[in-house]
Image (tube, rainbow, N blue to C red):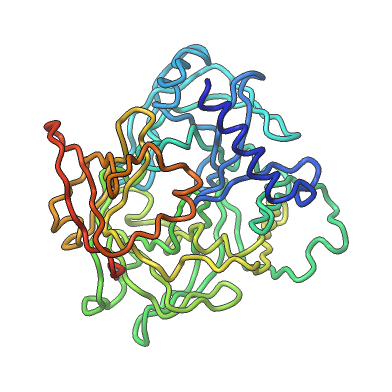
Length: 399
């Protein structure tokens, strides 16, 4: 439990720097690191760091979080159930706690009927203990304030000035999910307009479904192929990264890096009631009010500059797994990128960068970015236990 107590302290320190007065009474403060991380308590005594995922329903807990903290049996009896996600393997059979779990977030308290146990840290890294979906957080109007870093459930009627300068999106709320209408222009010949799913569990910009991408004529557009061993609850994922001319929900964002799926199964395959997902590289540019009763989404552009025009410079994806391994796991690679050409493989464990052990690199440093440039040496542990050093010349984005 020491790790969780450390993160409680980290949250308090972080928000003391931001200024406590900026967080309204009853709000839940969060740290934004591609996802919204916030503190909760389970069954009155167990601290937990969760992310808010509008693509999910209730509480899900990470398998390794339970093991590391000896909580495998802390929430009662277990059963099994099948659940799916964005991965390409379809629904997976997972363990679930079948006894109720009490969740306390800020001033709010919920009762989770069943709690699936999933491999969430394989996707997001060591700082994620679980996720919380719409069933609990979206029971009433919800403010998501990226400017000041908090979530707050609102009472109606709203204060007269609450929605000043906000713009109402064309939205629909169906089956516990939220879709908004938007327009994506890849180039002069390729445009998609229609429903996109709001997904605060997605850390990228726009992710098109396989079906939506198949309707476009983009064979000649420059692209990078990316494969990951853990793209969602449903397993690995394959996608292409391209640049789009512009994207518009209210204002227009130009030169945006997006991806499209080539998965045959999962949330980004075929037969979906949306063209793609809108992730946090877009949503973090706005302060948001969700009103489920009236199927309304209100947004106001904030001062965040965002990273939606940037793609990978190391040409690989890594996640901090120093909770159970010696370093960071290489979760995905770009085909033909500098990491793959150097000899790095999916599943490798990065134990040092420029001779600095990654265990010394704090979460705060990771969030700010390491600003790697030029010749960068990676010390890597291979699957057979051998330690190998690779030198990458970091100077260009993958796309």
